[in-house]
Image: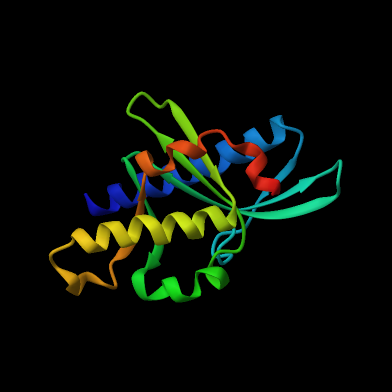
Length: 151
């Protein structure tokens, strides 16, 4: 059962990356998925009109939150860990897709704001190394902000 869950997570993650690449192409940008294990980047993008390149991180979830793969002590080096914009892809139970697009700075600000609020309410402070998460409700203001990829 654990192997099946892991496969489902992998397939969901890949679907999110392909969905984002497809949307980027539809918007006139060239998108290319990276080989796995490329640190902090899932898609390389190019705007052929401006010849500008970007590195995009994609996080996909079927839940109402996204594990961002960063723990609390790493917050001190977020500027180094986060290479560029993020696209959070939420796929609901009907396979309807919602995209939340944030600049690098918006991701860093949101991580710091929401984590401070969350950690302040947490009774068990021993979970400091637990991976941080962002919630759909906190990402809502960034829905379909595709131009944030190029800011």
